[in-house]
Amino acid sequence: MSCAATLKHLPAMVLGDLEGADRDAAVAHLRDCASCRSERARLESVLSAAKRLPAPEPSGSRRERVVAAMAAAAEDAPQAEAPRRGWLRFTMAAAVLLAVFGTWGVATGRFGLAAPAFELVAEDVAGEALVLRAGGSAWEPLVPGAPVRMGDRVLTNGGRAWFRSTADDRIVLADASQIMINRQDIAHPSLMLVYGELWAEITPRTTGHVRFESPEGDGFAEVLGTRFHLEYR
Amino acid sequence: MSPEERDLLKRCARGDESAYRELVERFERPLIQFIVRYVDDRSLAEDLFQDTFVRVLKNLRTYRPEGAFSTWLYTIARNLCLDHIKHVRKVKMTSMDTPVGEEGGKVLYLQDVLRDGGPAPEARAELSEEEETVRACLGQLAPVKKEALILRVYHNFSYQEIAEITDCPVGTAKYRVHEAMQDLGTLVRAAADGPAEEAL
Image (cartoon, rainbow over all chains, first blue to last red; front, side, top):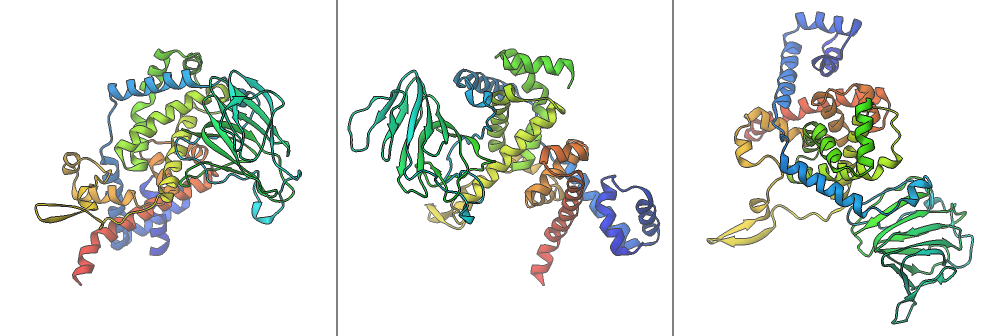
């Protein structure tokens, strides 16, 4: 085996992964090559130093803090319609997304709205949900069947609301959350999660895309497929 | 998954706080060490450690135990670490040479006042020069290589398990571990050679 081939195998060798004929050939080469032996010793030393690096030890205060956070999460968790429907949940802890597309391939222009205008219709409301109409100044109760149009805001306060869009997208707004239809662009409608949490199942478009936004521009998201969960607190 | 572990998770799903504590205690040492080594920031690691268990709890209802629970747990922790790394890349950067104030007539720069996220000074003092160099070089590895190496070297996961946790084929996992070891060796050598080259 040449020096180059031996050097290539050294990482596997020091990690104990090199076996069979490759290992035999490398060992034979190392017997006769001081330079490669030196390199192996150097790598072994690096690995040994890496293994000696200190790491935090268990701590009672850390444990209690985590247990308290788990208990709080269990209390806060909404009854999980979304998981029951088998939707993919995607949670982001802080700043949320700039734009989430209904599906991949937006740049190709293969997706778009089937309907000429984008609006939501409340399919169901549990507990209290309020709507503030565009240009209005008073929140009013959101009732099933009520439309939510450009500039309208909806918030939930001790409740939850289910929506279906004109493009057949489904949105579930969790408790203590607010959304707003933020842009009325036929090809690129936008829904802003002002705060809180929602689940969405997006219908694939034939052209264009739908955007989901947060009020802050400093965020990111990953979405798999057309079902996801967003959280912005 | 052992019957005991299954029972523990069922108790967690029912909201039993003593089960939460047992679960955290069982995985605390290896998991906090994994996260610290991944993000190289103890304060951040504490947050991600907590987030991992909160996310475990939130997803227990939909969890289908097809493999070891530990594999799922590490997958969640790994994804949270990756999310953080991706987020940090989007954050606006400020130069470490930015002046932030003045003290005793001397200009203070950001790099003077920021904690670098590594070991505390007293812990750093306990590291040998080589260990300190290796720690710094580990932080320079590509995330996918670093995570694979950490899982292999510090946690003794099999390549099959590493592949499951990092969502890649087994051959890729093995390749990444070996590449990470190679890169680490190269980085440590470059760090050691650095001052000599400057002298030239």
